Amino acid sequence: MGDKLQTYRGKRSAARTPEPVPEAAPLPTGADDTFVIQEHHARALHWDFRLERGGVLVSWALPKGLPESPKRNHLAVHTEDHPLEYATFAGEIPAGEYGGGQVEIWDRGTYDCEKWSDDEVKVVLHGDRAQGRFVLIHTGGKNWLIHRMADDRAATASRTPMPTVVRPMLATPGSLPHEDAAYAYEAKWDGVRAIAYLDGGGVRLLTRNDADVTVAYPELAGLGEALGGLSRILDGEIVAFDEQGAVSFGALQPRMHLRDQRQIARMAQEAPVSYRVFDLLYLDASSTMELPYAQRRELLDSLALDGPHWQTTPYTIGGGAAALAQAVADQTEGIVAKRIDSRYLPGKRSPAWLKVKNFQTQEVVVGGWRGGQGNRSGTIGSLLLGIPGPDGLRYVGQVGTGFNRDMLEQLAAMVAKRARASSPFADAVPAREAKDAHWVTPRIVREVAYAEWTRDGRLRHPAWRGLRPDKTVNDVVREDAR
Image (tube, rainbow, N blue to C red; front, side, top):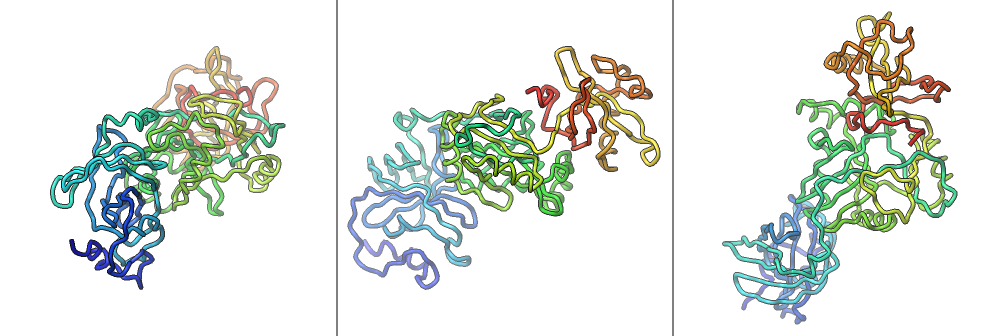
């Protein structure tokens, strides 16, 4: 039969690679029942599917991993046989060597062989992540396809289709909980909430109002490939950083409104964002939303997210006072306390999650504007703000601080498109504030920081924080009334 490992050894040197390179010798005898799938970050990410057979690991490269559904077949490229020792190999193959890159064991277990011929291999996998009946079919040359068998009832019974839209679970404003040990504490990121849908190595990013912002953040495109070809849904926040390296909502503002692809590409290089992930909602054909938070976090941590533009948010169980004190010291927005036994409630605002802030912020709707004076002459001097209520848009005050020239130009263009003849507010705007006002159809959502609410329901000392294209008017309610 010849030396089955001759091709393997001819491509490798034991002096240059950590891979097992056995000397030519009689092949070991095994049970022909071991399989391994290795995630291989080479020039192109792929998965190496290996089945023990006749003293070697017969191998195929799967560019998109195992198919999750009988409706979709994946390419399988036959490669050289590997030694049995390769079933436990994980590590870094040096650059320049054959297959250079990181190798990780994605799954390992046993298999039952139902058929093995030159053109068809049918097996049943018994792994932690890979389970069920698969068939490999030779289509010509090195190319095969791998198919998940439709009669695989045991494997498909617990599988659920990947949702196309999952709206994020929302936190309730509050203070530190009394049952400290029953909660996990995370940083409250000052950015844009986004759900990431990963499938086949691709990534799709949707905001809270289901806006697709994938093309706006091209530096996050590598997340799908980094996590592999199988389906996953992540919950997290897109954030940007100021010149001191601190998370800054203001630094994110220039990225939130770009449409020109050349500008987007330039800003992705000059002011890249990061995706901070704090929840896992779907993994390998199964929803995880019914699992408790603690278990979802264990699964999320097992993904080892730590890339150039994405990271898993750290958390602690208990120690809420210390976590809040650290947030104050870091001058971040605050923390989020999450019950470790809480399940994920899509689109719901739940007391199981509490946001504890260091400073007050409020989403508002622009209902009008007044012209500026002095160095603001000829442009916007202040914006008239409202919050939707049961009787319509309720006036809550005006803001005229926190703008720069670019923001004012952008706002001027936006309000010009939405001009209207009459006030959109359900209640009366004070005469001195309505004087010379220009009214606007209430569609523009923005965010302000403020000192407190006055007795008559006005914002005291509001300051601009930025536009919120990720929010709609329906999202806006008085923060302390939630």
